[in-house]
Length: 154
Image (cartoon, rainbow, N blue to C red):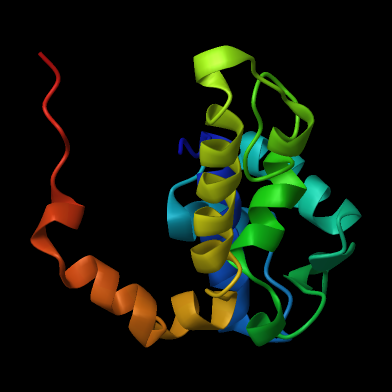
């Protein structure tokens, strides 16, 4: 799975908003806190607002804040708001992609991969991230040393 810079920035900005609670935070403050290019962040915040994840208000008392409690916003919600479905194959949902002959099982692999991604990304909320307290199941996955290793490419 590859996460775009847009998704990375959106998740980091949303984590900042989770910590801020109901207090509005400006785009400049978010950009500075997470070292995100401000113009790039403005566009991302617009997407999150249109998706109903955050709210905004203009003016001297303005800024951005979460549209609902951090406990109710999963990482999957943010990823979908920025990049669309969690897993696509050639721009299609895996259930809409068919294969012939010996490649037929690939569709099942793509669907299983999406289910695996969902089982993590829909379980972890902004509250978990902001508090630094991941669900036990997720934390245990990170305890496996092989999870931290990248396969070597020869």
